[in-house]
Image (cartoon, rainbow, N blue to C red):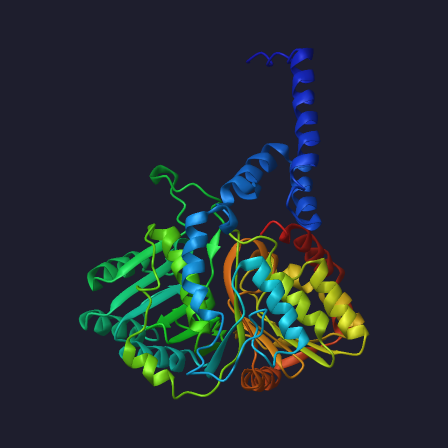
Length: 507
């Protein structure tokens, strides 16, 4: 029989206690820096309960050193963006009958539109612009066929950036169009998110296929310490962008994947994703090009100049015959931009509502400011509708989301749950009858602070009408949740929801 291990000396216990005390004291002053209160509370709780786990996780996932440089601190990147967007602030007089004022905003913009564009411009460095809406897309196959048709018309360049990508029966027309464009001598650039690419089965074969195509492509935000790529491993480039010849762009919620792309178990259960994207033309396309050029620079260190992104002369002449443009602005967001410009824009839009607000989002974990704006609007008589998913594809996010339903319903917010097994993946906001936003950003803390996102804000009656039609479509496919139904759930369900809500700030 082995003798019992010796008891640690008293000084050893005192040393451990002193280190533990110092860790807690330091964490109290370090963790809340540049971070919202809910996120700070979650990190401090983790560190205080399990310091041996919490401290390493904080240095890997929570510290700002691994977030990368902000645009304000990168002169070369800032100059790149400024050079590209310089021509997008005011519409061309020969093409558009939308003169601008001294603030650079198109005349005719109401106070709310002008205010939100000034706010977003100051935060992101992207000024107010103008553009036209082409079509709104829901059906995945139709969306990729439309994109393929636009690519087939390309004569100069095609720039694409997507979070998740695969070559399947739905996306085949898109990639075959890229192949044809490359064969015609068109410059084809593709950016894919490092993590998003690897979530799709068969990604190694897909990578080889991209190499065989001969197009220019890179992975965004790779986490590869041995190759010098050191950053937070949970950063994602969640944008979805396609730009053709600098004249037409697509943004929205569609990834370059089939609507049932997820795990085999999800496919077996019949889970699919319902998306919404929009095509655009006009000067606003230049701003979308600038976002792509910025990400291309960080992925490849290649600087794309305005000359690299100049559309062919024939396309410029063709644009002269198009209809007048509406006020628009691109809001890029992510760790490179200060003060969460997408969140601030959403809060401003909701707060400006006078009669109606509708929001569609697959993931809904708002911060305190957005909750206050939504409940204030509802309590002041504004009709507030949320189109959310009954189906969840992430346990923690789904339960955390449900924890907010009670206070929203009690304030008068209407919640429509998109029926299973389809998951509503659209991301847009509509305010009254004039202002709207659409893009890649979810209404959750990850999209506000960690993901690189892109959002279009538009004062465009046609786009608002199209999105209102989308609301009707979603309403028909949803059921309305009542406060009584939510309150009547078993106690253990509410308990799990509340626990997940606490930890959701760490996502």
